[in-house]
Length: 108
Image (cartoon, rainbow, N blue to C red):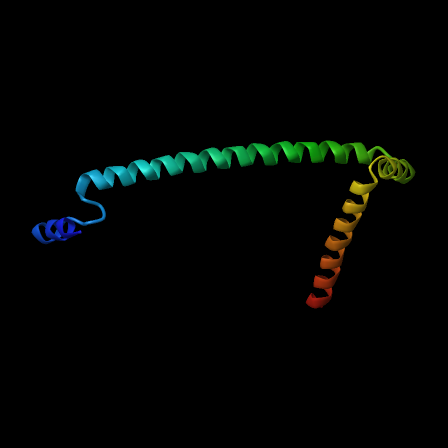
């Protein structure tokens, strides 16, 4: 610690933290690395969202060509095959609707 203080006293223009050009180049390298990581993560997130939007669009197109009875029959079949997931989906949909309806009453 004394050497750092002596170094700072001998050269007041140089920061103890950065230590001149070497510290700045390390900071620059770190910033560039984090920038690359952020860009890569943003690219992967964009690809993921694009993929999910495509899947959602395909499902929507499938639903447009069906009548309500066909959709209800498929929902019943799904509930018979996977009752646990059907209960979880129903609970989540109920929560979302409850929050939407509760918040809409607060607005008016």
